[in-house]
Image 1 (cartoon, rainbow, N blue to C red):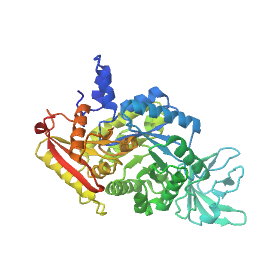
Image 2: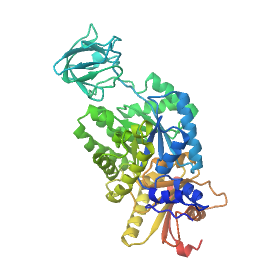
Image 3: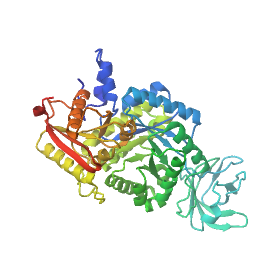
Image 4: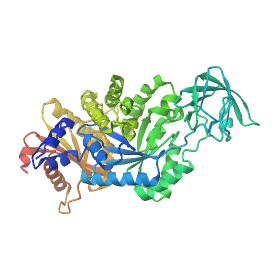
Length: 519
């Protein structure tokens, strides 16, 4: 029997893969049914470097929990083919791999240029939303209300902040902004532009996004959709309405924090969304780079407090796009995101277009392995949402049980039976010291929990012969033993948590002595 524990990770898996034992392939599949053995999950962006089935499988075995499909690039047929491969592999590995479709949002870019050119500090340059061939004197930025929304003193960043322009005036009749170059650099076709002003009247769901959301809702049905450039709770509701209009109310929405206005409205965005992503690329251009770490910590805490999974993303192991080893700063960045309380850390170009996609995941897996032993304890009182939910009170009690067990040098595990995943997310926010296994009769819930800190999720249909909650608990304990999650030789107690027969109106929790249970 394969015995699960939180320290059974990538190195042990390598030994299994090298083994000549007949049972080894089954053990590898059982272990990889929840790919990473660590508490913090790994999200990987899939692209040309990783979309073939062989590489996808290697990513799963290396520790990938959630696949990200970036709808800023690629055609529907390519995304659909990749989606179908992931679903097939997910079935092979116990339905444990979640899928996240990331829509582009209102991306503002430069227009076409006669040729790329350099601008120097102090140069004067005019900017218009109208279509023109760009020159060192006049360029297009594809944002219709550019002249109305920006005023003197506002800043325009081009190409991830490489070029910085300051608005010094405007000619409304000609639809032009008069700008001065503050930071020199190169301007060329279709480069992303950032405008930190909170007055932008951008439409979060663009025409392209609406088409993408319709396709995603009707033909894919992933676990998650990531909404780009949201600025308020209302923006999240607009994305949800588009999915609903396409006939899909089940997809969870991840709000990406990329603009200063999103930070101003952080609490309502967290409240309205199902999860958040700290997308530090655009955010680090629109606010000072040295302010990003503090906002990262604040956003993680708020998401934790509200039981909303939180992803830290962008440039985590950026140098591994070209190199087989990360920089020390990158390793520290991943480590600190884990210690801050992130549910997941994300790879972008490292796995989508990089030279070493599998190595990047293995490297992140190893960093997470070390970092998780340094995560500070969560004080339940600090993370109480204030919503007076029964589940929170019960989960705080389970957390206390776990702490007492750890302090008394005893061993144990926690099993959660959940239909929607709500109870598992409630308990995970307290970061209990005992490993957690969630069982659900809903495959969607199992895949959604691939993004939740510390939860190993498995599909388990409801046993029709279990007539009460205690019978269901005993059945779950038996299943956990079969999976290797529990062992009478090493585990003394197991706590089982589930909704009672009255659903969310009551929760049932009990602690079992495994030796006395005699299963």
